[in-house]
Length: 125
Figure (cartoon, one colour):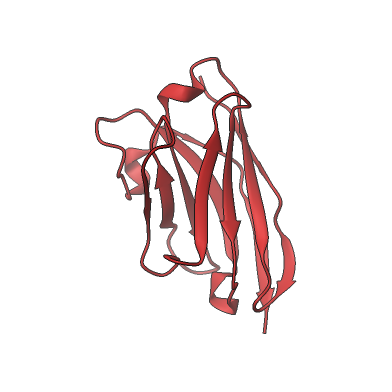
């Protein structure tokens, strides 16, 4: 069983930066691939970024590429999402998630096994 708890959300202005954190439980954290997703009001949950188990590979949605950076610290059981140059369209609830499937580059919510409760990010114009 894996428990995930996100933090770091808030209200910022367009162009600002924000770093989200996700704390994971479990002694096998370093074996999970970790992703970030987001869900805006009235929209489906969408993929943002994913990082493989050892932190050596990352993959991003086109909408955030070049602005967001996903990273992890396996010694601390933490995953981060550094968000720069934020835009109003980045406003959403952000979720971290974990999966164990072969091949880390998973972008479908159904492929993830564990989810956090989400943290709200609001970007004002």
